[in-house]
Length: 279
Image (cartoon, rainbow, N blue to C red; front, top):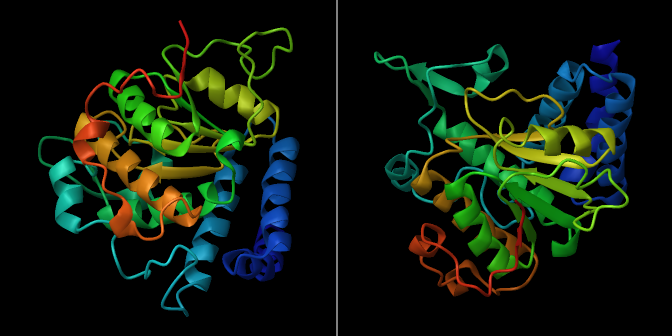
C-alpha cells in the first residue's frame, strides 16, 4: 500500500517542484493527514517526507536550474567553507534513521555527515521557506550560539525568533501573552526544543528542523542534517538562509547584493534585532 501511495504522489511532487500551488497544497495536506493517522508514531511521516523531498530533488535533475536560481550541481557556498565551519561534524551518538545522512564514522567515534546531503537539504529548506511570508514563520533558538545567529537572521528577514527556554503553551495556550500562530515552525535543536516540536505537531503546523546525529526526527516534516551546536556551523547556516531567503523573496536583486559579513552571525546582535526573549 505504501508503495502505491508513493507512485500516486509522484505527479504532485513534480507539480510542486515546478512551483505549482496545487502541488504545494497537496504536499502540506499529505503530511498533515499522515500526522493525524499516525499519532504517537512519526516513522511514516519521516519516511514519506523524505520520499517527497527526495522526489522534488529528483524531478529537478532534468533542469539545470531550480526556482532559487541555483544549479543542482553547485554548492550554496564553496565546499571548503562547509569544511572550515565544521558543519559536517556530528556526535558519537547516531540514531538509525540518520544512516542516509552519515558519510562515515571516524576512528575517535565521531560520526561525519555527508556535505552533499547537507547542501541538498539546505537548498530544499530555502525553497520551502521562500513560500512563506516572514510573519508566517517562527524560529525557536534555545541554545546560545543558535540564538545569536537566528537574531541576526531575524533582523535581516523580519522572521520572528523565540530565544531562551521555550515556554509550554506558546502555541497551544489561548490565554498566553506570548502565543504565536505560525504556519511554519523552524526548530534549531529538536532535543532542547522538544516542547515546541510537540505543540507544532499537535496543531498541524509544518515543522522543519536542524538535526545532528544525536537528534530524533519525530514530528519533523523536513530535516536538515548538520552540526546544530557549533558557533561557526550555525552562523554559516543562517548566513546562507538569510541570503537565499532575501533573494528568493525579492529583498535583494542578486546574491552579490548581500553584503553582510558572516561574522555578524557569530557575535551578539544589536538591540534593533526583531526577536522575542523568553525566560
